[in-house]
Image (cartoon, rainbow, N blue to C red; front, side):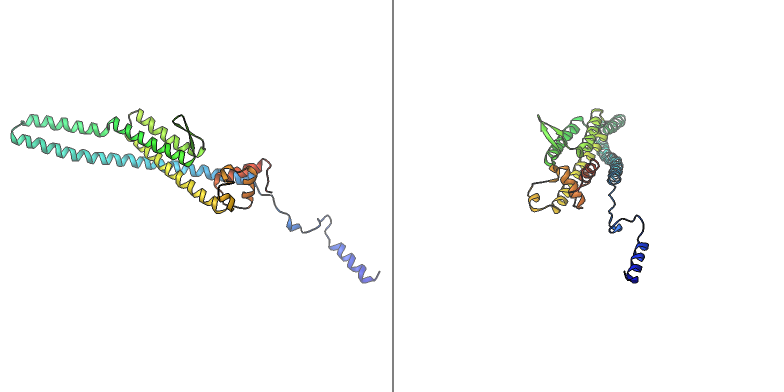
Length: 257
């Protein structure tokens, strides 16, 4: 063997690290930390829920304050009209000063009582109308099903809306009508938020689907865990709930194909 060949072979042996794996060491792909991603998304959902509940509490406080201010203004307007009428009767001699004073005192007291405690029937009618709106909304969004004339919630996303509505009914039963009206307003805002959120999710899902899927086949709601995992691995548009479901499936041993 020529000396130069032997020298090259020895050099190659010396430069090769002992125990080094064959192939490109940099090509080893690190397994994604699905558990950490799942925990991150879960934490984001919890934070979002906390912030949303705080906003709702603040809004209910503002609603009650606005209702109180509106009713106080109504009291002032009605008191002015009532006092003007009493003085007109006093001038005409229909009543004396003592009678006028008694009429004013009783009239103001009655107006304040009616403002603090609005007619029960008015609030009952308002809640019945709202209940019909909520029922139709849940059915239209596919978040519930009709069960003998009552809506049974079938999607966890509607649980918060149901909790808000329960608070509105509870306040009504306790004759706290201002609070009931504020809870009712919160319920309607949550219904509006759900409607907007689901419309956005559907638009995002369709943007990342093929022609057949856009026509209704293979929709995310009916996808298998494997299909969701594949979409997650491909970074296809997905809702937070779908991402969590995909990550949970991978934790259970289902991996992209």
